[in-house]
Image (cartoon, rainbow, N blue to C red; front, side):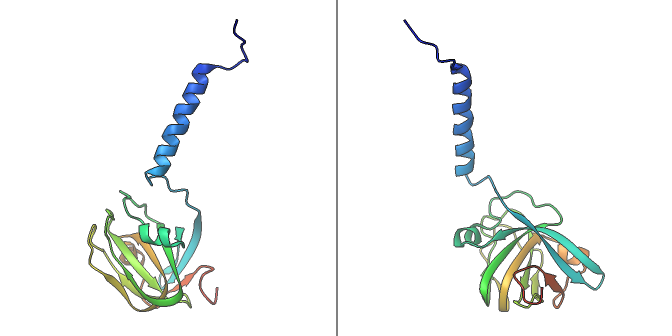
Length: 160
């Protein structure tokens, strides 16, 4: 004699498979459960608004935008290196060419490394103390007229 508790074994099997594939997807690092926030840059030609993903933990800073195959216009990743310090970046395992915007703790842009070389291990330095680095798709700085000295509005920076 068997007792039916109302379980649909086919449905349970399907849910188990879905859970397995979701866990495998998360384990591969392909899932980015990112919290996007708004960042503004005041340029000579106007204010430019970006949606940024924060990299604050050591793991997030180490991984950054590695392994991603595309990055949309107006989207980026902001690395917080508090306190302000000399910062070095590279493009190892990064498939998308980027503009790296080095930002001081007062929100002023210190330097821009434009059109970085994908997959390169060449060191890209801030060339001075920086609090943060904003990575955006290559060509963004030129397209929007973003330049050293422009002000970035975001809660990390003094004067916001």
